[in-house]
Amino acid sequence: MSTLVLDNGACFAKIGYSHEKVSVIPNCQFRSKTSRLKTFTANQLDEIKDPSGLFFILPFQKGYLVNWDVQRKVWDHLFGKDMFKVDFADTNIVITEPYFNFSSIQDTMNEILFEEYQFQSALRINAGSLSAHRYFHENNSELCCIVVDSGFSFTHIVPYCRGRKMKEGICRINVGGKLLSNHLKEIISYRQLHVMDETYVINQVKEDVCYVSQNFYKDMEIAQLKGEDNTVMRDYVLPDFSSIKKGFCKPREEMNFTGKYKTGEQILRLTNERFAVPEMLFHPSDIGIQEMGIPEALVNSINNMPEEMQPHFYKNIVLTGGNTLFPGFRDRVYKEVRALAPVEYQVSVVLPQNPICYPWEGGKLLAENPDFEEMVVTREDYEENGHYVCEEKFDI
Amino acid sequence: MAEKKIAVRSQDPNQRRVLDSATRQRRLTRQLDALEKDNFQDDPHASLPQLVKRLPQFDESNESGKRRKKTRGDHFKQRFRKNFQTLLEEEDLSVSEGPNYLTACAEPSKFPQRHFCAVCGFPSNYTCVSCGARYCCVRCLGTHHETRCLKWTV
Image (cartoon, rainbow over all chains, first blue to last red; front, side, top):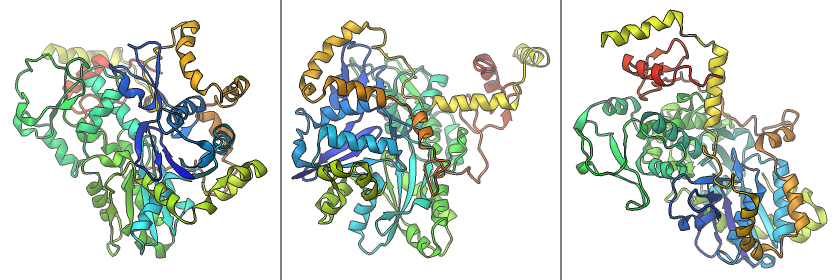
């Protein structure tokens, strides 16, 4: 009786058996201009020789699973004989869902898991709950923690107390990795080179070159300087998929500040885009989204909680999700929350070693938990009672 | 150089129209919605005839054919082709009590909005008279007028 843990994210699916390691696989289908007949699924991305102008087909829209056709195709591939070779009758599945998931989507997922794939039993849970479980497992003495899950579609700030999420404190900021990449595409397309079609390449640029600045206006001033004094500026070499397979950032020694480059490579010169793009997580109002940024929303969310719990929340802030991997993210969040929090409370922000797989590791621990059997809904249970038993048992 | 400056200014009272705040708001909303898109190009497979598409699917359906009966597939396609907006409306959240998807959205920030030049990205102090875009210096204003101002108005 093995357990498959699947953190079903909008960009990546983190999947693995609870006794094995996790694999991070894109959760979508791709179509390429060059290989016209084939649609690539999930990790078949590596087979594409020319990822320029890659067309993405994502099952998620605004963070919620709407396109079941595509999702089932991806799951078929993942559960099939090429990947995990799942024996459905003998497997439990732990699968994650976004917060406040719509009841129609929840019902559909029940149907697909139990009637189409026929898993032995299933547990639907929020990704943040798995992160909280993992955090409490490591820090046994703590009672409350607040999880910041900054992913592809949006960012959620969720307080947890004794393992249960507090619904009144959940805050959602509609800024995620997708927005940051699209914004970066727009500004590069306007200022330098038309890259609106190149989602895959610009995503790579964002991950390699962007960072969170600790002092925004000072960095802005430095970025306006000319020549060698401008320590912020970087040149990024774009891939052409024949000689240069993957784009990279030119090291400072090789940079040519005055003239043009002699070689035939395509170069992007990035100055303030490097830190202005991740700044949107902290100030969504920079591009016109009238919402609070992460530190402000954190403090707001904690202030909605009962007074006795507030110091405990400030002491246990956990950052998860892909966007937290920007260099300087953790320090910036700490600095801003420290400035906004009351002076007598202690503030501590934790960034795990691997923020993307942190919920998956929580799922792995949960599967090994002795109480696991009582939390899942078995197939017989579902067939007798229908959706009602899932609504009761799962705390979505 | 002096000629260029005069040319821009003389257009202002006679030919340049000024957008009102409702139109500016609509433009902003349209820009923000465009940021939510997955792809900015068209599907490469869209123009291929149906017949060609059948061929490669033959290989894929061979593996999972036994599980997926034809009627089931069609049933799923009918039910599950709804988009996000439809699902949200179906939930009918205005009548439910307690926290839900809509109430969980973050409130507007208490801090004032910062403005950046639409052309170069550095902090801006000035606004374009016609369309409301921000700019930082006269050179950026020139670029803005030449390229983006009042193009693609809603």
